[in-house]
Length: 251
Length: 251
DNA sequence: GAGTGGTCTAGACCACGAG
DNA sequence: TCGTGGTCTAGACCACTCC
Image (cartoon, each protein chain N blue to C red):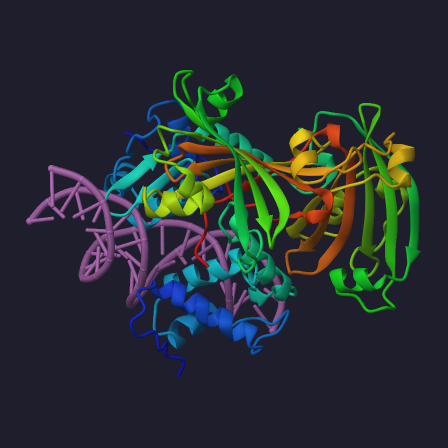
């Protein structure tokens, strides 16, 4: 019947089932507002237990494709198309390199690169002692030949050692994952508008009436160690920052 | 023992256990980097099964307090303090009324309130036909007597009926939850910088060099029906928008 | 190999929604 | 009252790290 042709996948069963049901929905077998078969039937259909079906449905619910109502059933939402597009955006790694679909050509120009002791503010944000050195980096990001953003980055040398010019021209995040084999965790962002400073005027061609969109962020490793404190500044007409605010969770 | 004195709580057991462990961590019994007792021990300690303990730990992991490594253990993160603060911000309902801790006094001044047919853009965003009427609302939000934000709101009359002047001066969201008994779901936001328009100049006292921070959002009900399309405009010096980007989830 | 978390089962009872 | 999803159990096996 509806057996999974999973084959050599090493994915958990509930993940496979979630993908399978999600695919079924996207194919239009169930449309907006429809009720899915109940958990007992799904368990029989996929020859598994109800707990496993529930894990699968939880994934679909969290992904915004369906929602469950106790005593009633599990239903297909009315805006899957948009939500799945939005989830893609949220599901991307932090860092400018992935803001666009990865298709544009990004060239980084290093404007400043030196090592200092951290300021008071940086000590607090990055959990550092006054004697722990940090990199201070300013890079101009050019997209398809045009200046796009200015990135002011501070990183602790002790957490992310071995940064050099070659790394700066490629991807710092790739270096952290591949060479340092560290797992990147959550990030905290603060988005604000600002008047242009002299860097913005020089490199982004701003004048006094050109608003700047600033995304300031602290990024943490999986274990909670902060490793990046940065501000990305862009002209107001170069796009926006998108956020998906999920439905209020439990805790 | 470590028995829970839950008493008359109607919270699920795993939620109680998560709260309990979280409280223990906050009290400093476990500090940054410490490993928690393994799941088997926790199950014995709380007189429950391992599956229930896992659900509790999943909550703590999702909340950013701990993280689990297969084959190794569950550990306390290094930045609980910040993360819990950030989670509070993310955990709040959408709408200006909760941007500040709820302590400031907010007074709404209705600048415009009428019913129209939707524009092309609004039809798309709110899934409407050209003949479905919408409210067009502009409100000035004053915080502690000073103008703080301009909210341009569009809502479908068919989804949110019965809006009137009394509702506008209080909370639209409260009206939706309490009177219409509808459940609010996820929201999509787009944050950008902009030059001031004539409303901003008149009501927020902007001049030509004053950047404006605009938060544009579409809010959905639990079943995925979009019910609000709005733009909130503030002066660049009135604060920022904060976002917590969680660790990349499964789907 | 011992110890850990991740997955999965085959049941059970409870809470809630709808007719 | 019946059907639904939510919770919970007491085990089991597997994948992974290295205590």
